[in-house]
Length: 133
Image 1: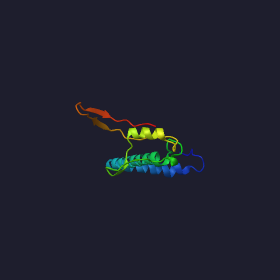
Image 2: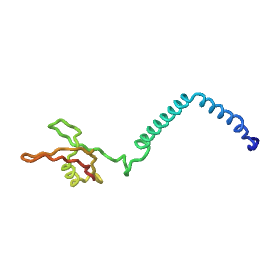
Image 3: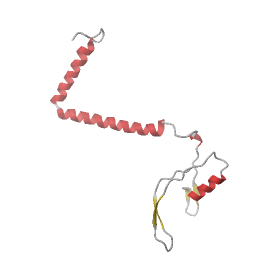
């Protein structure tokens, strides 16, 4: 070969010789080569998935200002002995009207399906939507 700049002879000699030897060994045992490639693919995929979750949950800042000043507010339902009861939409709207302590109020509620019934009427399937602040 002989055309490498000074100090790069090891690429022509050792590295290329090692690569050729590795390829020959993998071609001699294709099952092992496939197994090794599969293990690498699974490992790289798992590592990417874990990092994506950690990045989204821990590393990126939250999408609102002053996240350290966000309180979590629950209703208490004493007759049912529930200390952390989700806030009903009516109470939320009332709290929002009377709010003097917080800059703003908002709720987060997962979507769910409910069946509403009233005496003497047929039932109606309703999909809930989050109440936005």
